[in-house]
Length: 129
Image (cartoon, rainbow, N blue to C red; front, side, top):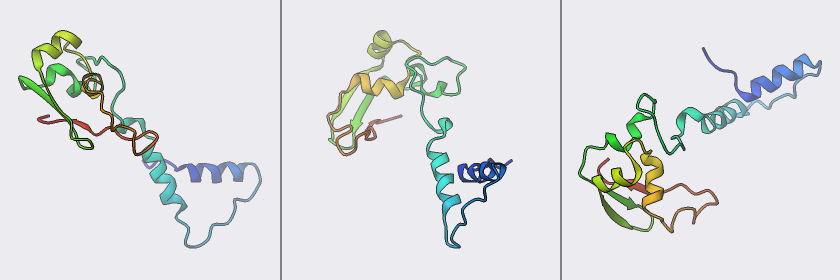
């Protein structure tokens, strides 16, 4: 079932209030723009910000214990910083249920994050993940 866009919901509200909705020009991309805004703000597409993840969570694949390597290497695509960590040391310091999406920020304090935008995307990534 298709979900109504914000523009459609606004138009329904205007009709119920007894006011006619404003006419749209024939070349308007309003529906397409509001659809994209809905996609950008969809919580299902974001990684979790929780530091601990349950084993039965839908994000369980991001847990430290799901890593299949003896070492974890982090690389920043923006500044080129490269650091390697032993898996056993990470488990000892953070635990097996720690979220790797948050772990990268704990292990490497990258100076390039947020430099190009106010809320810039993090360019740290795991090498062999």
